[in-house]
Length: 182
Image (cartoon, rainbow, N blue to C red; front, side, top):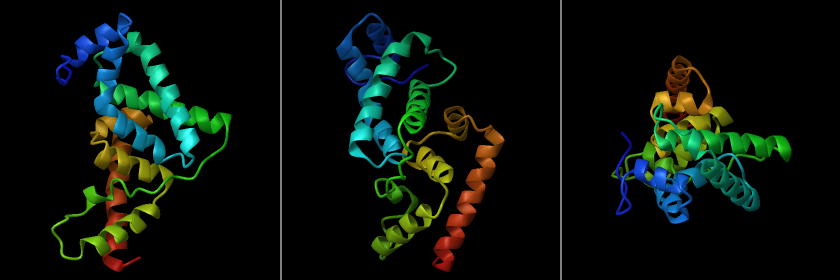
């Protein structure tokens, strides 16, 4: 069962309306996911123009592919998979852009009640920036997009066991970076 959205009804109802050509229903369906999708694109692409292009292409692809959406995953996970493929398409078609700063989601890794939270936040940002692009993607999906390991596996195409071991390794690296100061 898919989650209930605002005054527009359930995701399933909005999906059905969008399939019937109802543009406003599609907008209501996508609204709760746009910020995460935008930020997900942003961790891979630095150019604002490319971000907008990929976002637009992703929305069009999601709209056009709605008929293939099934109940094997959540709508959000399914949509994120499409966005990931559009990012890859962009890299293949144009150029490989540097990953954008993770400053929009480093707060999830730090307890804001700490007295030196600003310094700690900067340390976390620096530590995460030392990770590989794939590791940063996994951190984003787990902490900012709040995806489960199974959903991360589905989005990235990486086996579930590998996602779990990578996350264990990432946490170990970050812990060492933060405790050792670099």
